[in-house]
Length: 353
Image 1 (cartoon, rainbow, N blue to C red):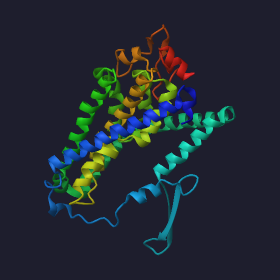
Image 2 (cartoon, helix red, strand yellow; image 1 turned 180 degrees about the vertical axis):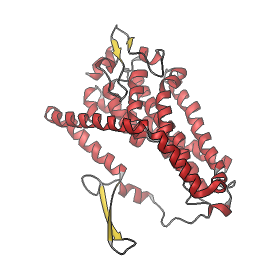
Image 3 (cartoon, rainbow, N blue to C red; image 1 turned 90 degrees about the vertical axis):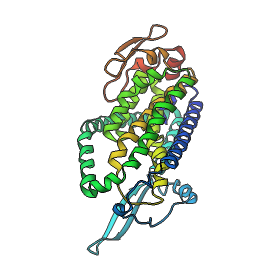
């Protein structure tokens, strides 16, 4: 949120981003429900192998809304209960939505404070850069862990149980494919962006999201795609991409829950997360890179020459001449972006200052 201080019309950009996040999420949910109703994955599952059980409790809208209110400054919750041996065991948990609300409030306050908050914001940015570097190291070996999780799922439930859920997995991937290959390019075209350039530009992030199964872990690559390949100003991308990594998840929080809601009406308790996580995370990061490009385009701060530039090995070359002769510098592998990537157009440079 604090990065919005680097762009003009920050409030309009933030509101537009939220609206586009909500719009694409709504479309994804509708598609997920339609796919589930048409394919009926629960009907094709083998009841004898699933041995489902009803959930212990059901959620409600009131519970969801009250859950948004942070219980403390950090949104942490501590629960204590007797363990297997009779001794008391304490667990620390946190609500991601509460954490987002707290972070948003702090970011808005920092922007309102102005220069007095600069040291705090610089510290946060430095800490984020360090964390992103560590996360990048972890992401590089994530495919090994993914393979292990899939193997563990098969070993725990057996091929017969996993096979009975095949239709559910197929339904999820059909929904993901419709959003990725139809909805996203259509939105790009409607906003004057090349669908072909979108696919070639977003591929590094989609690929990393598929193998890492983590939107947060893929965030450095997603931000690199948004700035280097799509020409989104760095100041705006530094807000939109991290915010999207925690709130805009068309795969995890739209397609998958919609189809799962229909499926679990009959069966419960089978964990196939590693398999579907790969596809839905790839969709998550693809949308997280697209929306900043659309919003930047609509607000006149997108570097169109960079968006239209040819990609080599997944990214725009290190130096590309933008409108007005400004040289754009590609970012490092950890997502940090050179000063030239603020935007090639006059509006983009003004917004990034």
